[in-house]
Length: 308
Ligand code: CP
Ligand code: NVA
Image (cartoon, rainbow, N blue to C red; front, side, top):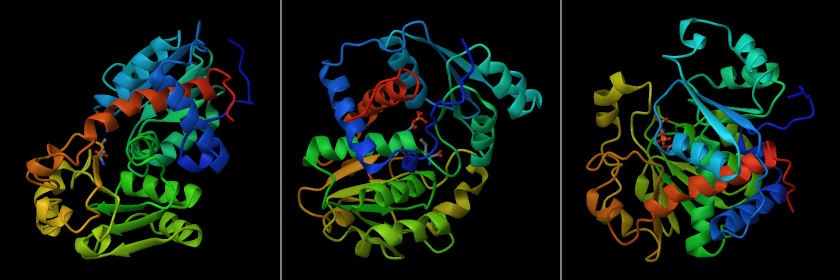
């Protein structure tokens, strides 16, 4: 393959314009309905670097690459030299000589920026401590599938101001829906991303989950301790007391509200079993939509698919 500097990365949601995101949702819909018949990744290889665990992200990228005609290589830190300290920049340069795209899941977000800076092939962010853009796009696809549109909807985020919350802020910034977050003090989302989103959309930050959830069309939560924060689990369980999305809290949302969770979930902590396994939960559609949106992203950044 020949190195090219004209590639595009997908590191955060605002890497796409609003119009491009709408085009991406349309392409995702065609992927999902099986009417997208091109195989834009024939002969192309995706390297997938995972420095954290994954079920959905890995399987969706691997299956998606295969369905589009390409091949995906799984690289964990136990296997590749990054795990023994080889610089990210060198890894980027070497992989760029052999593969056509790189997906990475890691800790520090700036490591992904560095990888992208030194790679000559598209780089896709499969989750960092700061962002989880593929997941939030899958969530919006799920909202559109169940509620018809994301426009004019109120999304509630209940819990940690983590990577998911930050990517929801970026989505509100680009798409302009209402977003109400409830986070305990000390667990706010990224201040700069919050401020930017608040300039462009009705985005509010609350301490009381009942305020954030009032009248919401979409209720969304995530684990209280993310990957890499396992030793904080006990302290976080204390700080997040009262933030469990249970039937009582759900009853303050719009009666036809849907419940989202990126998974994996801890039943009895951030969400009660009756909510996540109940009639308002659409978490299995949400998980399936990872495949469709990630195929659309792959087709665009690696396969030359045009949007709109
Ligand atoms: N939601 C999500 O990203 O799942 P995995 O960690 O299993 O990839
Ligand atoms: N916030 C979670 C999301 C897992 C998909 C984490 O980073 O572990």
